[in-house]
Length: 343
Image (cartoon, rainbow, N blue to C red; front, top):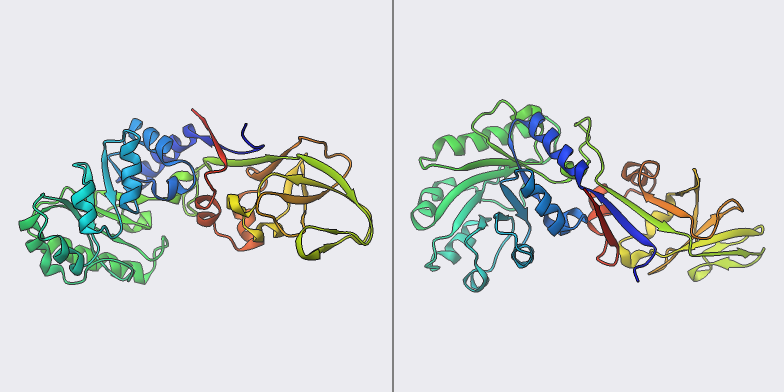
């Protein structure tokens, strides 16, 4: 039987977010489903995205692409990061699109006889992956199929640095003589690229899942809930949790819920009270691997639901209290947490 901790995933909200982002960006939205779809479940999210018209799914690595293939996903899958050439020879699928992350990587695949589908990442200033010697693009197109080029902005807020990045990217686009199916950007301000008609795609990660500070109307797709599975009292002089970290100064009621740091519930979460029966209650003691304790009162009952991510204890609320950004809160939710999907 599953534990009394689960994540509700609302696919109708995902669809609404996707349509809103498409409308506001004026571009085709690529569905970024890396890191288990930011903790939401890569397979179910991918199925929904394809159902609503998404053209390209994006993953970080070959193993993530293979996982989608094993679940029957046959759409175009763009792999962002380095892929070992020997692994390409072993595991290549026709629907896989490989990123050219560097000239060294391109040299390493020249000997592969299979004509690969490539998107070339242009390093316009992010300085993570990507090529700066753009003259090599023509050579790549001779050996493989260069279907697209893309770049990644440092910030989703329009500033001088992003404008400079855009101009560098535009020069590469204008200099390239071949045909490109896709010219796309990631982490991009909508107002910076919306009227740039030569760009036809946007990679939107966290925004699809309901979090983009400059986009009104997005709804968080995931809600995380646990339950009180133990109620007890502690007397003056006793401690709660590991390492005597919480000393009882006056008699208290406490509850235990079945979630801990092995579930991705970071120990810093103890700085953000949880929501039970229409009010906040503080976490006490150190968060354990599998359980967490809460200081409660007599109105809290056995098996009451505990909101961990939701309308009251939002990702923004958690970040404000703990410094843990929503990317981390969501993408680190472990496989031990049951996902419940709602259409």
